Length: 240
Image (tube, rainbow, N blue to C red; front, side, top):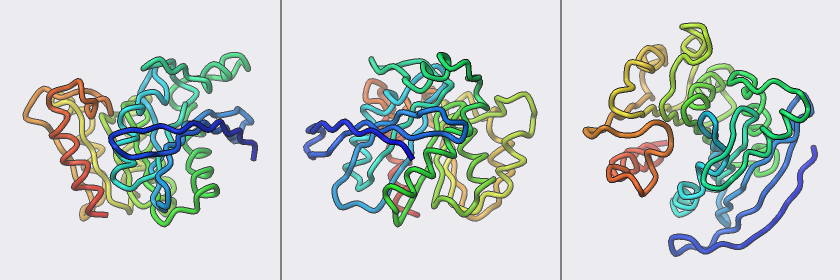
């Protein structure tokens, strides 16, 4: 498996962490770019996927805070995307150049490849997958299709974004691991059916009292209600 490392040292929220860019291949040969925010000595890994039109830059602020909670993070550029926070989606650019499809569902293979890379590269004791908007639906599908491949799944603003009314829920019914779904307050209707399809026992959801925000950006400090989301995420992570 091909991968390229570029290493830089950052100081964030009072904790030194190594950040590096890596590359690995999807099953169809497309090279995927991801940023690793490494927490020294940690055997817990979170693989982070961005929302529509964006890039791994969605997690520039979030990943260091997850480092502080004891997690190494892999923030992935999926082939369906663009850019955010001054970070260009390199996987998307390569896919377009190669004439590959870049619809939402085409990015599922990027999730498969990223999880495989994280498992091979880090051999984690705990592996968590996390998605935002369209990718938050795909991580629920992944968790149902590969129920033994991770230890938990977090989903920020999922929905049946793929044409079929049951594309995600038909897979989600097979989820075995703890799941957490959240969104903006007015988005509940988009994912409630998916949540109901997940077996009882280990599933949680959160809706803010405020308007809230779509996707993982709900955790960005620029939004006044980010603390309510962070409190729920931290509680969920502690529970698994």
